[in-house]
Amino acid sequence: MGSGRVRIVLLRGINVGGKNRLPMKELVSLLGDLGARNVRTYIQSGQAVFESGEEAPADLAASIREGIAERHGFEPHVLVLETQNLERAIAANPFPEADDDPKSVHLGFLDSVPDQPDIEGLDALKKASERFRLDGRVFYLHAPEGVGRSKLAAKAERLLGVPMTDRNWRTVRRLQEMARELA
Image 1: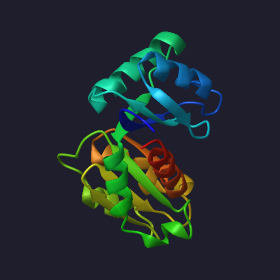
Image 2 (image 1 turned 120 degrees about the vertical axis):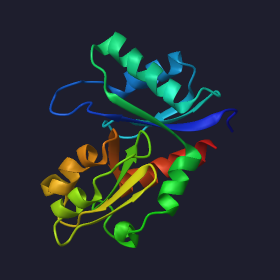
Image 3 (image 1 turned 90 degrees about the vertical axis):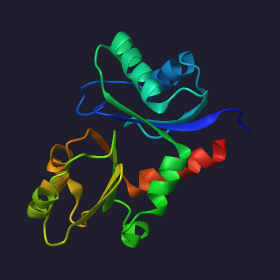
Image 4 (image 1 turned 180 degrees about the vertical axis):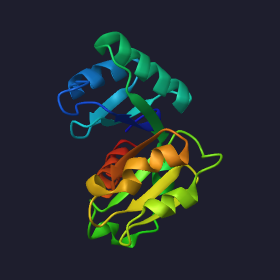
């Protein structure tokens, strides 16, 4: 199949409420211009799987962010994951109910490991039905009543003190399938 590293890019804050529009075909074009091969996108909310060279994920994320700023006039949050990071995050999921209710479990992928996360603050915000776990650069949230109404989900990034972009379990598993198909 491929001849490069399989990477996953997660964009935050695009195509929401008519703002920061970035059609996926334009993301594919930008990634191609940056040397990505076999680019495949998943839904319109900003994720793609592709092969690239040896460039460090943070450098690649910066190049993508700069390319979007040049072409579209806004800078979304961009996170690039290596396949093994995604595999590790899936394997470490502490909430097995994710498979039965994939929209109730979200994985927040962090730019770095938080230095001083406010765990007490996170605990104070969670509803009785909610659970969370911070594991390195992944914040796991089980919110069976939905993340849209969750104060914990809304404030987690600020209390962790590190930029984060999250995806529900269904999306994470689909990205895993796509990455495996490329590998």
